[in-house]
Length: 342
Image (cartoon, rainbow, N blue to C red; front, side, top):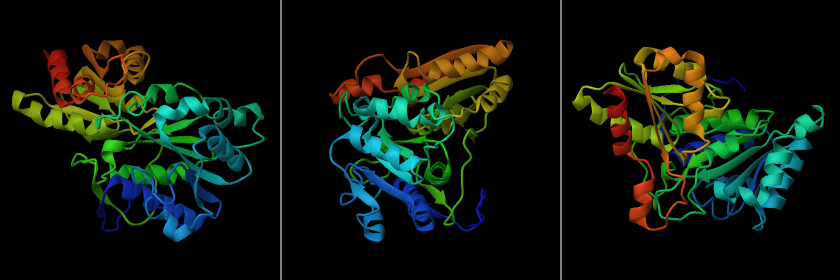
């Protein structure tokens, strides 16, 4: 199939969930070795609509509901991938990774290395991340740093429907394991309203978004705001508000954490001199610290001031006012930007 990296066809406006499903369906039509399995992915269509409509076209043989046993079905996905198939395995919530940590960390990520390259593990581990809807400490984490920390897995985090489709095509076709993390609040499902930004014009034909290429979602000259997922839209809201204060913010969407496009971040910081890194993951030992360190190591003289905006190192509360207090929002980003440009 001819593949377009910059599609020219007139696009349609899709939610992020529909864009993801469109990419998965295309890959399943093109390759019989692609299949989907996970909890509630078939008859229910995924609790965040991540597989909605696939069962009707492909049936239960290729869209499979599984028992509540993450260890078994993630392990089955690893085995199927090593046997030459291309499974898309949905871990319902990223928080559940602890149940199947060995299958992810020690099998999926390492088996190519441990076999001396005798096997590949071309599978996609798709999982929902993020809070903002009062589901408490075991269903609301992002855990970006946890997954990005271990070598052997690629990792993508789309923020818009257009990126979601292109990243899914690239993930399914990749010969390495890819962790595909989608934020629940971006999916566009009826019971969980999304910001306006994620629903974007999406070309109909297949295309890929290359791994390791960040996207400058808004150009600016005064401060660089680096983020991913839901907080791309929070940062864009903050940037729009900061215009009234005479501050021109550049917003960079990382899109992939592994591989990481540190060069785009560095180029922006060399222009602005100020850096704010925003993340819904925990502040300690995470993405915010990694981005700041990468800039400081590469060109410390370019960095005049830096701030991090992230989740405090506490379990995410169930109570709505408390959850709202700990989750970073546009106001927090604005305050951080104002601090670094003073």
